[in-house]
Image 1 (cartoon, rainbow, N blue to C red):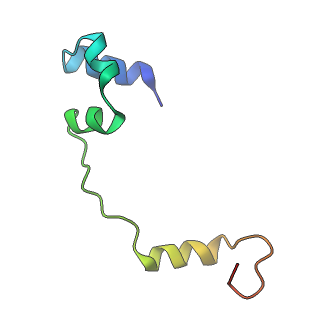
Image 2: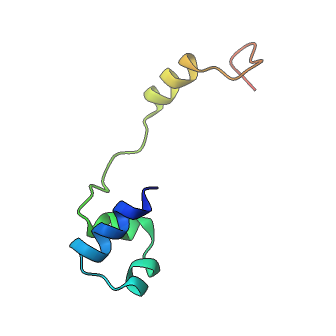
Length: 64
């Protein structure tokens, strides 16, 4: 993580005190900064694409 940039955003742009900044979780900080936290989770189709592109080493028949 780029802590310097996050601290500039939290302490500078958001006006948080250091104790307030360090008490936040990364998700809370991202939310306060306006980040889109509504991204959909990976769908099965994408997982299967990635599995084909990057198979597990030693996999013979697609099963563990």
